[in-house]
Every structure is written in structure tokens, then in C-alpha cells.
Image: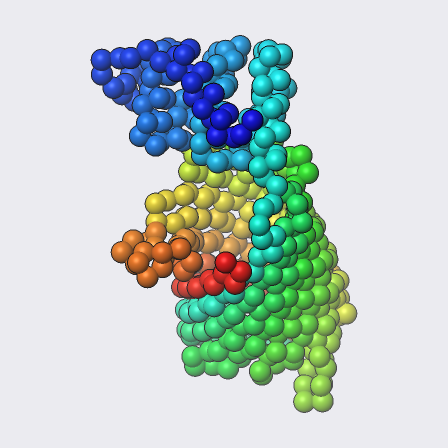
Length: 438
């Protein structure tokens, strides 16, 4: 039985069981006043469907499904709307919920299983299994304190406080390109490879100039309610005025879907970083900063009122360095809020990081062991340019130019004067994507 035929059957079932013509349209106020009235709510759902407002239809039907769990026809109508929206993930979740519901009759259960099998057949990859795209990007960032000048204007060196310049303002520019190539292995898994290069320059100073090449290989797998993503990565910043370095790592992330509004995320990673020791900078012993970093995190995400998401994440970091005064253990907490707007996604979050270092850095101060409390506040707006400037749709009909505005404040307090600083960064980034296998 074809999917279109299923849609026709489900829609017809709804017409037979539920439609009772009213003399006037049902208002949202009537729904608020009669939240459990099945007739009014179904008429409202049908009117919203006719207007193409499927989210409002789904919200109404989901509420009725909770109020009348034994009403099979409400379940079937809800499935028909999800079919129209081509919301495969949500549809599969709804179907699984119905199949597990003791109120679902055997006849309905058999019918739903047939629909589920049709969906699975439809979701099998067709046509091109390979995908590839190329990204070009440009970013400008304004720094209020690019060198991390301390709050007091003082630093420790050889147990003595010394004055330094404060509040160094500068700009950095980044031009980047990357290519991603991947393959859909089946309906639930894919593999992708990404390589790129960023060229970073500074307006006045030279300390933050570099060429950064990077690459990653990842595998994604959907397994029941799990969305698993293991990966390996590599990056090699070619610092123009400092010691070069390279980093290699691997890790995994998993998202476990609790229900349509809630999920748990967790992951861990391992990264090793090595600095190149050359004759020109040998006296600075850059290889003392060589390190291994272990990270683990667990988070919880909850969406509400369709366009809102709150998130939280706890993390643990352990850094083992060649010189112990570069190593530390740290705990972190991140709290965030995301709002989907007509012109993009607004993200606000705050991150708290507490690091305890392994050893005193006697070259700076022989009595103080460094402990840092770092608070990072961020506001970000991102999306497609045509969302922000609709009249550009003729220039970008496929919506493949993306924008990102971001403001970050990093407030670092520390037992070591050298690491107490406030930095603000404001950036704008624009990215153009080219699909290579259309």
C-alpha cells in the first residue's frame, strides 16, 4: 500500500468520524475556554490544517490524545498530519509510542505497523548516496583585550609584581575554506570526511596570526533512540610568530531521545597536543606545554512551546602536561537558551569553569598554586541570510549563504595575577556553501 494511499485512508477516516460543520471558525480563545471539548478542538485542528498550520494542528491533537487515550481515531488523525509534514523522526517516535500504548486496539496496532513498514521502505536511500559540499567563509572579530592584560595591570615574575599595558584593542580577520565529502551507508548511518584551511591575520599586532589546517572523520548512527557520533580529528596551526603545534584526538557523542521534547547528551574525548621545538625558540622551551587532555560531559535538553530550547551540561576536564604547572583538573557547567526566530536562531548561554592546577609555576611565583574561575557569557544569532534579508532570495534561491553574529565576554579570576582578565569579543561571520553533487 503506497504512502499517499495511507494518507488518503487516514484523512477519510477523520472525515467519517469527526467532522461536524460549524457555522463560524473556532477561535483560539474558544480552545482556551474549552480545552477538553473534543468537538471544538477537532474543528480547530481541521481549520488549522486547512490553513497549513500543521504545528498548531499537532499541538491540539497531542493534547486530545492525552485527554482521550483510548480514542483510536485521534491517534490516526495525528499520524496523518505527521505524514503530511514529512516529519519522519517525530512520526516514528509517535508510532512507537502508540504501539506501546495499552489503549491501542489490536486492529489499530496492526494498521499502524503497516504504516511503519511503509515509512521504513520509503526512508531507504534512493539515488545518490554520496554527498559533498564546499564552504567559503569570512570572519571579522573585534577584541577588547587581545593580549589578556590583567585587571590590575600587574603580573608576577620572579616573586615580584610588575606593571604591564592594559586593555589592548585590536581586530583579527579569518578567511576560510573547507570541503566535506560523505556517504549515506543506509537509512540510519552515514560517514563523512572534512578538511579545511583558515588564514588568520591581525590588524595592528602580529601575535595572533596563523594558518590553520584541519581535518576530521566522523561516523553517525541512529540506533533506536540513540544518535551516536564517534569521530577522529587533526589540526595543525602554523603560527607565524610563535611555536607551531599539532593536535590529534578522538571521541564520541551520543544523544538519547527521551521523548519528543526531552533528550540527554553525553560524550568524551581525548586530545594530544605537541609543540615544535626549533633553534629559534628553544630558549622558551615550548615543548614544556605538550599535553594530553581528557574530557567528559553529560547534558540535558528540553524544548517547549515549539520554538524554545533550554539546555544544561556538566563537564570534567583533566590536562596532563610535560610541565606540571601547565596541567590541571577542572569542572564546568553550561546553561543555555535557544529561541527559533523568523530571521534566525538566537542562542544565549553562560559557562562556568573551575580549574585547579597541578603545581606552582615558580618562575612566576614560588608560593602560589594557580586556581582559575572563568565565566564565559555568550549571545549569538545565526541563520540563513535570506531569513534576515528576504529580498536577497533571488540572489540565493537555495538559501546557502549563512550568517553568524556573536558577542562573548570572558571574565577570568585567578589566584595568580597573571591570569585575571576580562576580554570581550564581537564577531561577524558569513559562509557560502556550494553543493558539489547536485
